[in-house]
Image (tube, rainbow, N blue to C red; front, top):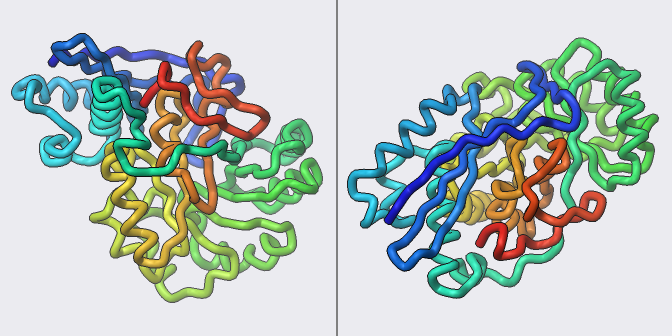
Length: 325
């Protein structure tokens, strides 16, 4: 088996800001695996500084697989690499390769029903309230908006978004920028403004205060929950978890995490990093039946891959096999 890697830079349609900083481009690492019979599988990941990842570190992890490459598969990959972006790209490439070699779609290999059209959230980045109101009005046709917060003017921002998009459902994402007291003081206002969910209000590793606390607006773990190993600590703190393939280390663990979380009584949100349709396609298989879907990465790019997913507003059609799976 052959393995190739490449780094691609996708300019964003607009500067994208969260509480930790801003960016104007998405840098992704693509993996391609090729079998002896000529079939090729692809996967994509986003090295993320929040998890101490860089493009170089991710490429180095992938290169470490060259010894024993011919025996590599989605099962033993879980032992050979730690969860994270590097394993995600390889895992998804191996699933794509298996689908192409077998003549089946990945959803068939997983024993799932054929995927359906999903409705994604659309994310508004952290900006001044007036700008956020303008952008909310521009996107008011979308049924679900996700609002990046985590600053001193959070309530003013949220009120501005609600004025701009009076009918859209709202999710807020504090990106670890709040504490429990702030969440609890804001909760009545969030309810009044029709907010359905708060994502990761407290810093990961410093969220013990949530255990047993009243959560009048459901709280979703993002940075706190990566894979099944982190799942037990979520119980009693969170109502849902956000599954991202770059955190789980690929589709294999993401599917297992979803099942374990549902068995534990936790709701499911499926999210993404800012990346292309190649990264969204496998995530869509995890997002079937999820309470919240946030796979808008391609909508934030100036230009997606030519064979990318088909979006109609916020509705995403299932991936074509020419893209992935």
